[in-house]
Length: 425
Image 1 (cartoon, helix red, strand yellow):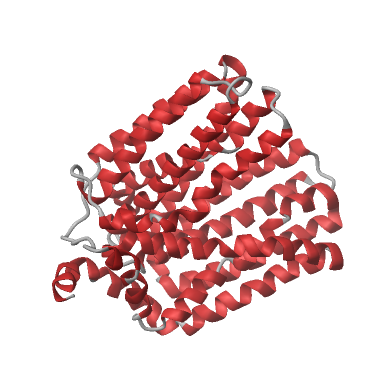
Image 2 (cartoon, rainbow, N blue to C red):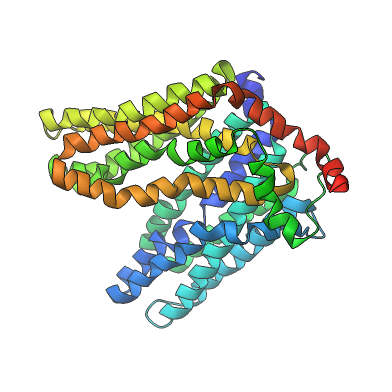
């Protein structure tokens, strides 16, 4: 792999970071920031509750992802063209929210929030596909790390800076500022390079909806790969489901203490963890990195148990949050880089959206189970269960050991052979 300085100055990596920021920026504007705007404007709790529905497109984005594999805009190519369309519309609708107020037009603002969420999810689809197509195999771990860090920084800006601007200059100024920042994403899209090689897009609906499944299932150990994607982050998701409630109810920390610790130490832990994870993949390879990170991310959650003996202790709590996010970030960088490598360039929008959706299923299904374990058996059992739930992912990784290094190489070859595949089909 290139030396560290060269990686950080590589145009593809820089574009990946900036597009990660553009992807994360709209997310809070249709969710937490909008809820805050509605709350301070005196909107009823019943109406505020509906704001959560605006985030639904993020969980369903794989449904329309095939469209972005199939149809190519007449400008900027197959990926950047779609990204530009989404970004320009996001600028318009985010700015358009300043024309209304929650007191007089809550339904219109909710409708605009739904449009923003849909366009943001659509931008995510194509940015993920563009990153998958653009990066060379040895750049994927660092590209994944930079994209995630850009996304985290954007979430901090849209979820935090928006509130600060709104407090001093009003909500209209806040949303206009975010619309202007989306303009920086537009500039990034315009100067971004095109992926190398020629990839002929699917020509029929069948080709972009059914063939991606057939293509994936034809690969050696395909079912084992899908199970690995489902379970690798399961234990980590389980531990994170109630970690904040643990700090509040069991350790009796204040909201301010948790807020500062979670936002500061957790943020920097994740940033450094993803970068370290990307560098270690280059040194250790996919299998050894994923195995090491999988073990570390499940054991790191046990540090919280120390707080049960010490009681409220900001230093230990900060250390636990930092270590958990650092280890989780390392695992996320390697895992996301691997998922990118599993996508065929012809169907990368649909396959990445589908595989990434499968990866977050664990976060959805473990929530109720986590609550039952903590309630019925206590917090020690809760954190021990997070370790148990990490074991299947590690065992599945061991099953895939022989093929995991070659897996991404084989898929990378699809970039070179895509046109021949289309002609033969």
